[in-house]
Length: 541
Image 1 (cartoon, one colour):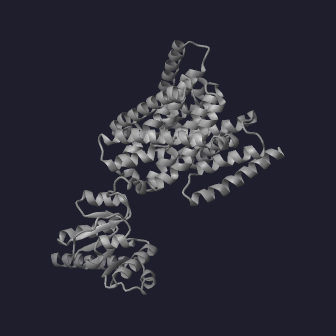
Image 2 (cartoon, one colour; image 1 turned 90 degrees about the vertical axis):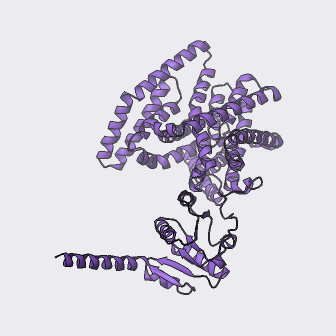
Image 3 (cartoon, helix red, strand yellow; image 1 turned 30 degrees about the horizontal axis):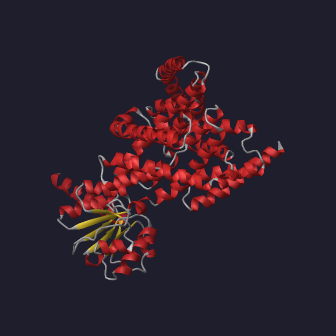
């Protein structure tokens, strides 16, 4: 028991330190857990040991909860809305990548047919766990390339289910292929029918009852019961735990509780996923990696170039070059579900152990490289083309005597409307891409960038602007922007919205021409309107 506690304590300490360091370099915490597993396995000499069965089982339920959260995002309404992108682009990407990688593995590397099929299917998948959070955080999810990338990721997540079912099919050597296929279809039909009829009623009742009780622990317990119950039913039917969890997620996605459910289980899902990636790390053979570094890196480069080329050509058919390049860069890596596929294939003895270790190494390196690629996706894409969605890359405008509006939140939209009604020439600058797209939809000249950057100030001809209106809320942002503008053009006419007198005092050392106190102006308008209304009533009386 003491040794287990020492291993757990040391694992948590190493993982925490590694992830703190990796976060500073924008590297996914997944890599931290994998490296931790590798370090621990070598320190305690249990690399590949069968004593890790309990850890692997916990890790498997990390994948279960990941599939459950993916199911939460797969509502039928969303699938229907994006059906063309998902089922056309997604299917073609998986089919083309799988087919061509299979041929390369089978004939160029002389790998047996079953192993080649497993490799092809696993390598066709990209990393939802790394790419999707980046797209959400950077707001790129609403750009054309982001929308197309998400659609392909959605189909890949859907494709994981039949791929995992295929693993069970390939591992079952007792029944004939026809019998296995018949049983698979029969049991799959039973599970789906049960889950979307009686199961759906049970899930809805359980969530409603626990939510009505207003006890957070009861609601969370209900969610865990649903996930584990659905997973166990699927497993007893001969399928993977993930299938049941995925279907349960899809059912909850149609209810009013899906946002709360996703929020409540996020930390637990990450912890379980950490255990899964830790168990993957224990399978990495450091000495093999050191001795075959050139081979591993060569195959990785080949696979990523191969996938990037296929995705680029696929997207390019109906999109511009820029979107195609960025989508290819975002999705050319090998995803986390490849770990699950390789681990399951090795456990069921349908993939040679040595080959499985090599494939896991290739996947690990791919995921280490991915954060650097997607965090610099615009810089990499700019080697081929530069376009509107790249922050701070603004084509110089030809304007004079115009107004610059900084920010396009609610206040910025009202300001823009007033300026348009008064026929005043203006441009909008915002660091929120969604706001920029909205402004352009309304017919305004809007640009994506930061007004404190000198290239942006030059491109917007700030020195020739009549005035600059700041509608941003953060005091820190106001100060940074004002200092940059005045440093670039000391004579700039700045009009800044403030919320308190303290804000005005904090900015008083800057040569800001106009302050507009939001609360004071609102109060003045309220009083003015009340006096006008009272006068009208007296006249009518």
